[in-house]
Length: 328
Image (cartoon, rainbow, N blue to C red; front, side, top):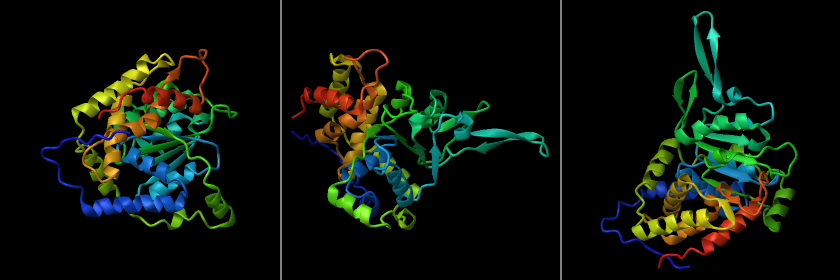
C-alpha cells in the first residue's frame, strides 16, 4: 500500500533513547512469555500507550490471562484480577462504604478496580448491570461512590477477556460497553513448533520471574509523548473517510462512533511511536482499522438481537476499509 510521510517543519525532539530502548526491551520481555504472538503484543502495547483499554475475545487456554499478567509484571504495574461471574455485583468491583462505629462515619473500602492494570476475566459472564460498573472508570479514569468521585491510579489499563458468544453462560456486551474498548483482538493458537515447546516444557510460564523493565512514571511520560506525534491533514481526511464509510456502508446498520475515530487516531500515533517515528503514516491508520472498528459496528444482514461473530464483523469492516482510497 502507499505510505504517506507527513511534512514536519519543526519536528519534536526524538523520544529519549533510554525510554525507547526500555520500550523495546519491554515488548521483547512480554514476547518471551507469550510465545509466537509478537503482532498481538505490539497491538497491546499500542493500546496501552494510547491510553485505551483492550478486549481479548478467544477460546479458553490460548494465553489471554498470561498476556495481562506479563504486561503487569514487565511494566511494574499494580495488578488486580476480577473473575466475572453471574452473581458478581458492582460493589464487588468498585468498592463499598462501611460504617465504622468507633469513628462515627463511613469509610470507603476500594475494590479491585483501584489498580493500574485490571484484568476483567470473562467479562461477558457477568450481568449487564455489573458490566456497566466499568463504564465511568474506563471513560474518565474515576468512579463515583455515594456522590463522591474517586480518581483511579495512573496509568489505568483494563484488559478484559471474553469467551465467544456461543459459549454457555455468557451475556452480550452492550454497544456502550464495547465502545469503551479501544481495541478488540484475538490471541489464537500458537504456531505448532511453539505449541510443542509449551506442551513439553512444564516451566514455560515464569511470570513470577519476569524482570521489571519500565515503571509507571515512565509509562505516563510515554503516553504523553503520543500526543506529540504529528498527523497531517491528508491523514485526517483519510481517518474521517474510514469512519464515515462504516456509517454509510450497506452491509452495516451501525457504524463507528466519534469516540472510535478519536481512538483510531490516538492508536495510530501510538503505533508510530512504537516504530520510532514522530509522525504518522497511512499504514498506522490502515493497519489498526479492523481491531479498532470491528467490535463497534452492527451488521445489517442479520435479524434484531443476532450477535455476529467476530469473524463476520471483521470481514465486513475489512471490506469497507479496502474501498477507501489510501492517500498518496
